[in-house]
Image (cartoon, rainbow, N blue to C red; front, side, top):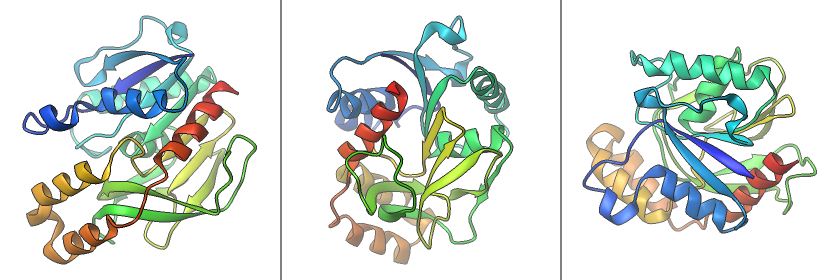
Length: 233
């Protein structure tokens, strides 16, 4: 399976030597559960898109420092492309910003949450157990780093996991889209580094709670298996 990574941001220069860029994180994550995948990266922030929608078997929309409502020329263009992919029933996975933009593009809504920043490790409860969701889990934990949330589902969406903090933490849309608010590609150390960097914005109390949450193991490989199994169906 050939995966097109629609890259919506670049890791800050000072973090690159230690953590690498976002496409590399996803390659490491997904190769850990399926060594037969191949990838092409498209820098959609700079108008880089596949020559045709069938250039890849599936697409992955990454996270971003921007919000879906920010005044960036490339964001509505990517939303248009998401709608085109969906109209052709191309398989897609969205992570964080990708989760939010896919929902917005397909008729839902996303916005800054009045609950503030989600940082550290978050645990969400699973409501649905589709056949591709193997191994089966009643809940799962991932690193999170977001101020925005999906607040209204698009038509055809089903919420498969949520928490008191994030009502729509994982979604399916029709039979071809899977999205997560959390970051399966992030590890504890990147989470710690981002919280230290953003402490003035996130706030001391929320940052301290996020740091404490890093004691919680994450289920990144389980989520990666779900993603690959969903895309290969």
